[in-house]
Image (cartoon, rainbow, N blue to C red):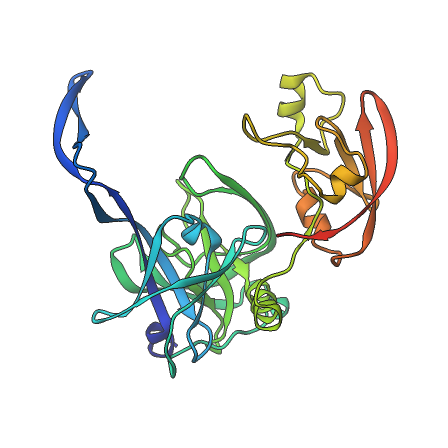
Length: 334
């Protein structure tokens, strides 16, 4: 399995053009000195590696699967290392933030690739193998284990800008998954990919998670059919309420999706969207969507993904102490 998998598992190098550092000055901090870079006035820039991750080729014409959080920086350049002397610039075809999946493309043909299996047939205790670029340094790292849990829910942080993602339906495994492994394949005993390694729990041992490969298969099918992934869209910014948030802000309910802007200067309701057309307002709380209660384990985004673009869904909304029922037509996310 390892001999078959390793040639198709790639390293993703993330780089950016940053202002050139001319020197450092040291700032006293407690009993230590903090090194602070000093940027010159010349305006010169240099290309620096700022991160990395793993991925794997899923077709002989160069389509690559990885995690969305590995390639989330839209201003960065991404280079694929297939072998020490084989490097390819990568084009980001799609980023699926709902499932933490991304599809990349490199130019060429007859690439080694891995066959995608079916995550729906997984059973507890089934043997698996994880492959990736552990810690960003150890290429083709192989670890083995079993499926130790199914349909797990997890709130994960990428560690960059405190961004978090709510992931559900995850495969739990005791195969070692370390930073840098993100985006690599989780394979079954037949050598088929059944998941994309996405997260590990800091401070815990033998506790890793993978996104089911079915999400990649669905995204790839849409890309080949439409040239992009198509997702239904309401047109709102929101946060999912829990007991802590509700108590802190003295809200009347501890569940639902509170419509609110994420930062100063932006809109909570996207202009021209279905949400604006039906009169949704900032600080409305969407309690249910098509009868399903909205909470941390069942966020609004996940409920909306169950429906097709163009369908209408019923919303139960709490506004200024009153319950309102309305219907909204799902649009395509641009």
